[in-house]
Image: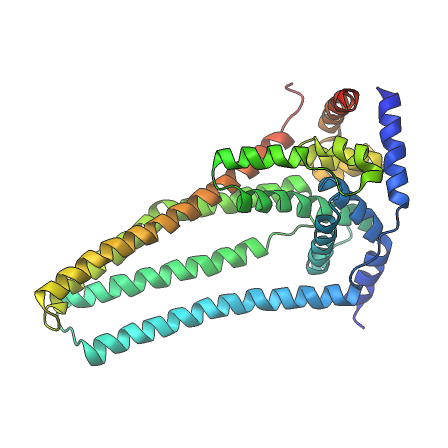
Length: 164
Length: 201
C-alpha cells in the first residue's frame, strides 16, 4: 500500500463526517446531493494529495477542498440549469420553496440554505467552531474582513430565523 | 441575537450526531478517482485521434480523389484543416489547464485561478474563434471553383448554400457555449466581489 493510499484512508476515516455535515448544510439537507458532493470532495482530495505540502493542517486543507468543491458545484449546477435568466429565477424560487429531505433538522438547513453560497460555508465553519484564523486560512480573506462578514451573516440569519 | 444563534448551534451539534454511512470505501473512491482521470485522458486522446483521422481523411480525399492542383485550392485546404487543428488543440489545452487548478488552496486563491482561466476562455471566444470560423469559411469557398470540375453547377450551388446552413448551426452552438462560459465568468467575478474588501461597507 502506498503512502498516499494510507494517508487518504486515514483522512477519509477522520474527516468523512465533517465533510458530509458541511455538504448537507450546503445543499439544504438533500441527502443524495450531499452524498455526491461528499464523494466529489474526497475524489478531489485524492487528486490534490500530491500537492499537500503541510503548510496548513489536514483539517484546514480538507476544509479548503470541501469549500472549493461546494463553490464549484454551485457554479456547475447553475450552468446546467440556467438556460435563460427567467428560468434561473424560477429554479431559484423553486429551490427556496423545496422542502429539505431531513425533517429532523429542517429549521437548521432551511436557515442556512437562505444564505448565499460563500456565506453558507462560512457560517457552517463558525458552527463547527473553527476560529477566525482557521476560517481565514480556508477562505483566504483577512481576519478583519471575516469579522465584518460573519457579523453580517449572523444578522441575516437572525432575521431569517425570526421570520420563520 | 446570541439566543437564536445558540439554538442554531445546538441544532448543528445535534445534526452532527446523526450517523451517516460511508457509501463507498476509501479504496473504492481511489478507484473511482483513477477511473475518472483515465476517462478524461481518453477524451483528450480521443479528440486528438478524431482530429488526426479527419485530417488524414481530408488529405486523402484531396490527394487521391479530388486532385486540386491550383494554389487557391491548396490555401483553402490549409485554412480549413488548420482552423480545425487550432480549435481542437485549444480545447485540449483548456481541459488540461482547468484540471491543473489546485483545490487545496484557499477559496480566494482558487477563485482567482478560475477567474484567470475564464478570462483566458473569453479571449479565446473573441478574436480567436471568429478568426478560426472565418478561416474555415474562406477555405471552404476557395475550394468551390475546384468542385466545379467534379460536380454540376446546380450541385456546386447546393454545396455552397448548404455550408451557410451548417455555419449557422455551428455558429449557434458556439454562441451558446460562449454564453454559458460567460455566465460562469460572471459567477466567478461575483464571488470575487464577495471575497473582496468588506470594510468599505
